[in-house]
Length: 392
Image (cartoon, rainbow, N blue to C red; front, side, top):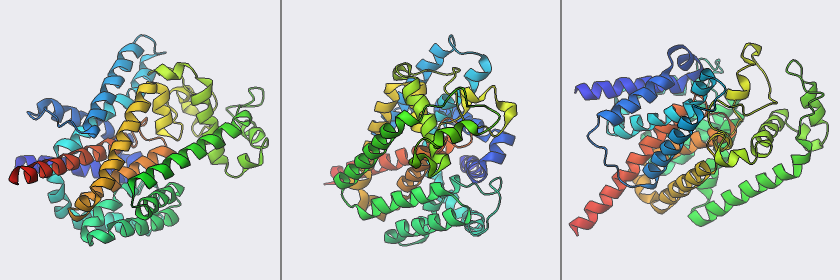
């Protein structure tokens, strides 16, 4: 009973972090709290012989790569403060073990606090409140957990409807991207067709990036931290760059990380080193730290720059394995409602593709806790298969 109450308290902490990260993380450092709890659970658990699932292998490899860079960067960082700010990439991974070790308490928690959570999430869904009360991105992660209230075949349609409402009321274009992704997995029933579509989409995005690359170099004689002349001069170079200035800034950031830092980024530039020279500025009091901590609005590109090619191999292995597990065992996960953990992880992954997530304490723990839930769900499926075979 005591363990149950502790688990519930941790889940409530995680929910507050998810609901309003810009308030609770900045005031109470909940990302660090959750990461610390994950580390304590890992060190204090007698269950350290992990099942060799692709998710667990990926997390352990990621921890290993992060630790290596942390050790090397301790001698090359520009300062302790910058080093510690980038170290969020490593220590946030320990939040995974919050989801992994406390997974068995989650269904009971959701039943106990269903009314409270439903009132908050669904009530404010229709009210355009400030982001400090109801986050513009992260609440999309909560929608899959309402799937238990409907028939299995309706889980995905309900998530899509909630995400559409969310995108319109709270003006979140990222939520529309989540809707597009969920429509994709709803339409494509085959793993092969789905993966071909994903690869074609990524190749097309890469081709567009390469095509626009000659226009994405910021003119140092025009760019200034204190005005927007530089970015508008860049936008004027090609009609496509004027379609959406926010997307253009993303491309400028990606170009600096992928091209300007080549070939150092192949091994990773580590922690505590500057990554960007040109970037938009919202708070001039943080100007000195922004080259070190500002995200690239794509966490996967940013972590590749910091951690190098090993991160790319790990993340490709992770997602290919997760998608394969989802498609090959979808009937089982749908009937057992285990599918909601896949959908939650898919949602936070789409958010990470278009926003800073894994490199910032504002969202990082949400990603890894959901991955921890998913890891245990996959383990339960494998144990179910093992017992089914043993019984025959």
